[in-house]
Amino acid sequence: MDNIPEGYKQTEVGVIPVDWEVETLGDIFTFGGGYSASWDQLSSDGYCYLHYGDIHKSAKSFIDVRAEYPDIPKLNILLKRISPKSLLHNGDIVFVDASEDDEGTSKHIVVVNNEDITYISGLHTIVAKSKVAVLDNGYKRYCFQSRDIKKQFYFYSVGTKVSGISKTNIAKLKLPIPPLPEQQAIASALSDVDALITALEQLITKKRNIKQGAMQQLLTGKKRLPGFSGEWEAKRLGDCLSKNPDYGINAPSVPYSDNLPVYIRITDISDDGRFMPEKITSVDNINSNNYFLEKDDLVFARTGASTGKTYLYNPKDGKLVFAGFLIRVKVDSQKLHPQFLKSYTETTMYWNWVNIMSMRSGQPGINGNEYSQLPILLPPLPEQTAIATILSDMDTEIEALEQKRDKYRALKQGMMQELLTGKTRLV
Image (tube, rainbow, N blue to C red; front, side, top):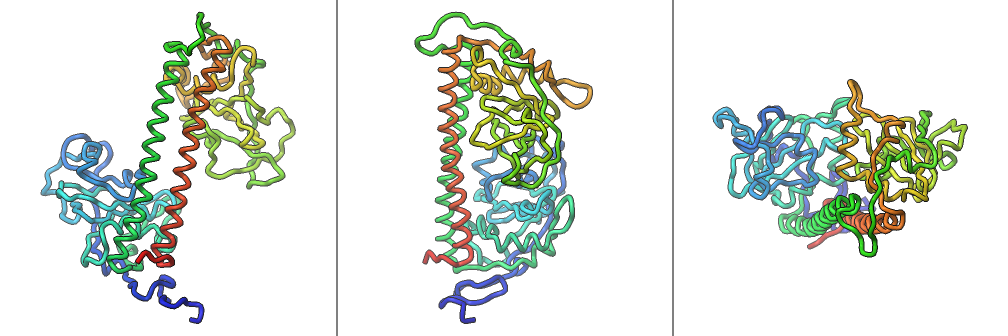
């Protein structure tokens, strides 16, 4: 007891301010289920419908029904078939009852529905409706996101491949509750950070669209840079390589080790072509240096849904061994700039070619010989270099904005942990 600071008290959810209360969710909310409908039943006609998949996909913890109305899926159904418990009103909270991972078990959406537009909660959802007015609607967006609350969700979730939580178990969760003025102050502070993150995400999207447009113009010769002229040449990728494409190695992956090289697999390459593994692993039993990526090496994914995805090796990513489902190409630096090639693999022309070439009776795929046939229209090397520099500078600007956004996200996580537990007070 001597370790509890003045003005705080020990509770079943930890040490909190003396003027905060602890309530179980069952004392605050009534719980109901949603109306089950499949994706195939949804369209652009009918009443707004909230599928649990939409909650999992959302980066936000609320949905503004009026503002987002055009994008909300609709269900064409007689309203009398829907239970009032499944109809969503302003301030209702919708939890998912199933998730493929522990993190997803606490996913939820707070409904902003000031105009009371008909909105149906759907498949695999749990609807929480307030019995008592102890939570500010803005505060509801954040109060379930502290580590302590998420631990309770993990504790009560069940299942192996799919984690699930029931209405009965959600009702057992205990929530620390500040006075309403402090709730509003906390929600306002966190909302300000959310606004900064949203503004950065919008700017990143805008910059990406600008880059995409620039690629479509510059990489096809539709737009020429000042000081360059002359005809472009139609080439095959194989004509511009210093050696034939080669395949990676299938080897045992092991937990990350400072003494072993890192393994790069198809799943470690992001959709925009960066090395972004969910979990870094090392690779053992490498008997040849042939499998280490070198500066200016580019790898293509050769099989499955990711066929065509590419990664241009960046030495900043460390020593990498490329896996068996990747194909490496080494460009002839006197004929083809590697960054020009990487940028070309992000264009519509390239992906149209991939979609045609990867057609198989089974798994989609493109082999090394087929990648050698990739048609590419090339300007002289100095113009390739100029184009590659412009696009690389755009990438650098986008990455800087992404790093800034990620810092704000980390700041928000830290703020939530302090504010939602009462460790830091705003009033």
